[in-house]
Image 1: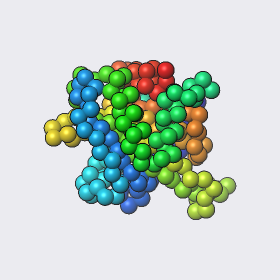
Image 2: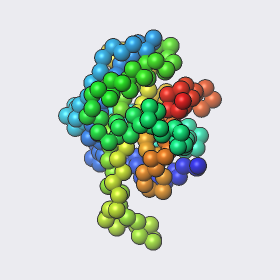
Image 3: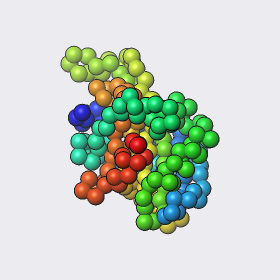
Image 4: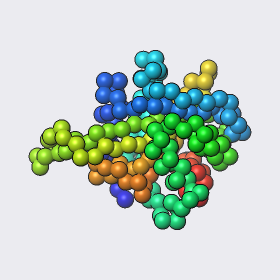
Length: 208
């Protein structure tokens, strides 16, 4: 399925300090062997202004990337959604708004076992919601809403000095944002380098 660039731009316009759509951020720090060095889970607006801006920039990298090249849609089959598969965990993380620390810990352990990195890295997950305005026939917004799109964005970033996250090497948006609405049967996967991607993100983490 092709991703509509306008859908992604509409979403990123809600990822600014003045129009922020995020309410929670969680994450973990890993060493190069996948062992967890620390975790955090906070209300997004309780971060410092600098940290808010930094994390908005990192999160926006995923939907703002070049569509259908660096950002690819992947569908989940009925088999992929059975109990015990990652789809169930992603739905749980979204539905709890990242407020379930036990589920987050399971997710981090799962990532640490399968993600491949030659250096320490950070995983950041943000929970957001977007009250989607109805568009008139002339494509102007009517500012009435029929749907609230709730989603998580996850980024995988190499660690710089002092636990500072560098630009994401890969990440994902779940559920997919298709036709200005939630598609729980799909996920959008970001790869910074489409010629040398983290193939394990799709093949071993998001699908198995």
